[in-house]
Image (cartoon, rainbow, N blue to C red; front, side):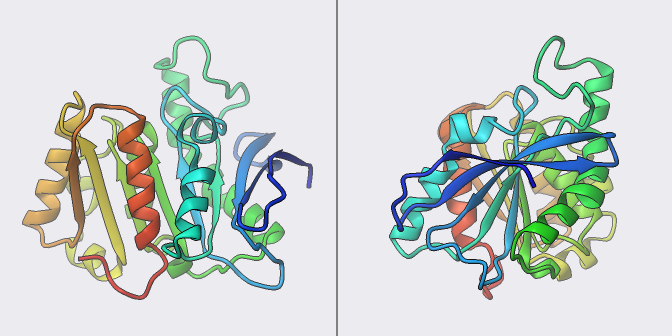
Amino acid sequence: MNRQISNTSGHPHCGRVEIVEYDSTTVGTRRKVRVYTPPGFTRDQEYPVLYLLHGIGGDENEWFEHGEPHLILDRLYGDGKLMPMIVVMPNGRAMPEDRAEGDLFAPEKIQAFERFELDLLHDLIPFVEANYPVKTERESRAIAGLSMGGGQTLNIGFSHLEHFAWIGAFSPAPNTKSPEQLAPNPQESAARLSLLWLSCGEEDDLKYVSDRTRAYFSEQGIPHVWVEESGGHDWPVWRNGLSEFSQRIFRSVRGE
C-alpha cells in the first residue's frame, strides 16, 4: 500500500492523516484517498469507520484542506466526547480524470458521482478492511457528506442499509433522490438505522432539498435528527455537522 503522511504532529493526543492509493476495478485506475487514524491508534485494536464525502467542487483533499476534520476530531477526543474511529475521505468522482476541473456539471462528471457507489462498495471498503484494523459489521460503519456528498450519502446509505447503520447528510444537494425513492419502505429504514442526521443552513439556497426530505421522514415515522442553523451553503455549517454527528455515532444509544 503506497502511503504518504500528510500531517502529523508526533503528539500522542493528535490523530494522523495520510494519503493512500487503492486499486479501483470500477474505474480501472489507482485512486487516492485520505485516511484519518485517531490519537493512540494501534493495530492491536479494531475501529469503526466513517466514510466522509466531499462536494461537487472537491476531491479527497476538500475536507482536509477546508473542513480540517482532524482538528475537529482531535479536540473532541481531547474532551472525551468521541468514540475512537477511522475516517476515510475518498474522491466521490469515480472516473479516470477525477480532478475537480473544467465543467463540474458535465454529464460524465455527474455520472461519475453516481458510479462512486460501486467504487465505494466493491473497491474502497474492501481495501480499507484489508489494510486497516476495522470492524466490519454494519453497526460499525457510518457514511456522511456535504452538498453533493450529502446527496451521495443519503442515496448510498438508504440503498445499502446492510452496510451502513449511521447516516449523516450536511446540506444535501439536488442529486439527492426523492424521499419516496430514498426510503420506499419506511418501517425497514426506521428499524435498521441507528442514527439519521440531517442539517442545513437556514440561508442555504438548496435548503428545499433538506426540507422535503425531513418532511417525509417525519410523515413516515423515520426517527432522525434535524438541525437548521444560521449560515448558508458553507463550511461553518458543514464543520459543525461533522462535529455533532461524529459525537453521536458508534454508540449504543439510538438517535432520537
